[in-house]
Length: 285
Image 1: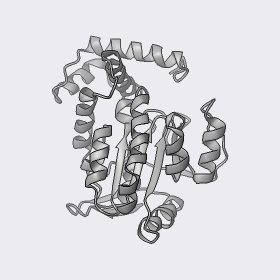
Image 2 (image 1 turned 120 degrees about the vertical axis):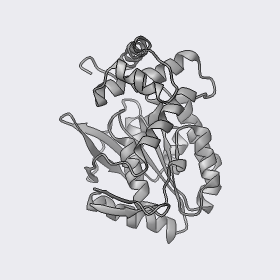
Image 3 (image 1 turned 60 degrees about the vertical axis):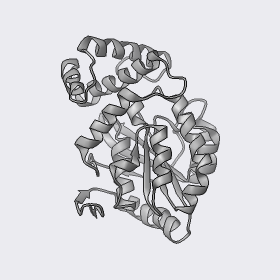
Image 4 (image 1 turned 90 degrees about the horizontal axis):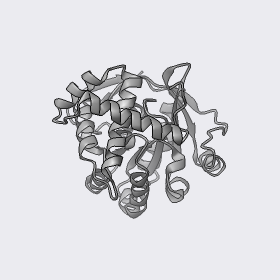
C-alpha cells in the first residue's frame, strides 16, 4: 500500500503497488527523469477491460503526484497539446482505451507524435505512458527506439488485475518474435498484481471518456468506424460491468449522447462480427 498526496489539491490517494514495482518506478523511472535528465516512455497494453487505464494512472501518480485529468488524453490532439503544455518532470498519459480495438490509424498517429515531439519530451524530462490494445499494432520506431519498457495487463482465472513487465531488451525480443502471431510468450520474471483505484476524479474521468467517444474525428474515420468504436465500448460494458443496453443508453444521455438500446445492440453485434473475423474475440466471449 502506498500513499500519494496530490500536489494540486492535497487529496491523499491510497492504493496497492507491489514492492518490486515501487523499486522499478523509483530507480528506473524517477532516477532516469531526475538524475539522468532524460524522458521515459512506457507502454501499457492488454485486452479491453483488463485494467490498463487503472494501472497507468496508479503508476503515473506515483511518479508524478501532480498528475491531473488534463494530462490524461483521449485523442491524439489532446496528447500533443498536453506534451507541449507539460512542465518539467510531469506525467502524460495517452489513454487509447477510449477507442477500444478499432483505432489502428490513431495508434500510428501517436507513434509519429512520439517521434516529432521527442525533443520537447526530453528537454522537459517527461514520463509518457501510452495505453494501447496491443504493442504489436504500434509502429516499429515507437516500440524499438522510443519505448523503454512495456507492461502487459491480463486476467487469470476470470480475474483482472495482473501485469507482466518487459524491459527494453525483452520488449525488443517480444516485438520482433511475436509480431506475426501476437504472442507474449517471452519469459519475464517481472510481474505482479494491481487493484482498481483511480487516481483522478473517477466521475470526471468517465465523463471525459464518454465525450471523447462521441466526438472522435480522426483522419480517415468513417461513420462505420465510429459505430465500431461505440460498439467496442458497449461490448466491454456488457462483459466487464455487467450492465444492459437500457442502462447504458440512459447513462449516455447524462453526457448528451443519444443512442437507443437497439442502436447499441446493433453496434455490439457488428463489432463482435468484426473482431471474430480478425481472431480477437473467440466464441465463448
